[in-house]
Image (tube, rainbow, N blue to C red; front, side, top):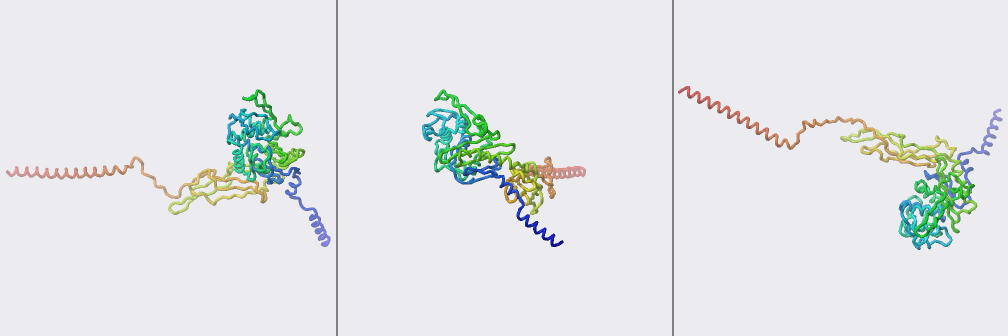
Length: 442
């Protein structure tokens, strides 16, 4: 019987070895989309967490998705009602046959109209006009675009023009474009422009005709392509040059999930197929998890002070997160699987004010960092002092020190006068008594 049991256990172990236990990583790998484009990425727009990537840090040519960065700088540096006057360079420096809306030299439109022309119709001469209005020249604007991109973390991006027509010196990565888009997508003015499927620019100082604009992104324009249209896509930009091939940026909002998908160097047939695969993967495989709120006290730290060479506890500090955060996690990950690492000092020194940042909290799944947040002092509860307090004399009894120099001499003078008066009185009495005595004798 023992031999039979031992043999059975050996067979069971061998059987389990042939069919290994499935892990969450295995499940996640099985669900990954197959992407045809040379570079692609999907990120959580709120936390910037990468959910999927393929050659995401490989430098590629952006084509007209460049105009997302152009729009960002224009929104930050110009007013929607500002007038743009188009120069000869703005109009004639672009390639013949490239995207445009037929602006003329000296023609004027508002910044708001120009941004619609850039983001809906990808008008290259309009992008040039915005660049000149914001920075004085196309070249200066390219420098500012690169500087702003690096400020947002897009360190592998370099711009030389605002429209995206091919230049060997203009490049980006899928990751960098996702970062830039995640910064601007929630801007209320940008969102308002993106909500327009169509738009009209009325007559100007150079023409009586109305220009009719239409959104070129097929997932955003139901009139253009009802089969491809997705109601959860809220922003995006198309791009194409012979060298860059097809490029596409897409922002989707599904419930409380915000996603940014970027496709670089794609062919026309797979451009939207890849984008849909990325968005569906993010929506079907991830869920939103709300982390600690600002109203939650995570820890209490003592506040210490030093008096008369001795250390004593002056109070207690309640610690909370700086901002409320939410992250996307795979649907099969449980909350109990997420751990936190809190970095805080052992105590707080007296004088540290409420609201001061004093540490960090890191959220992890295994060794993977999901999110970070600053920790600050939410509230301070001071303790009674262990040292006796010397109460000041009532203000009614307090006398200014200067008064002493007047009062004391005056008191002394009065005292001496009273003494002298007594002496004179005694002498006078004696003198009177002596006279009376002499008169009696006589």
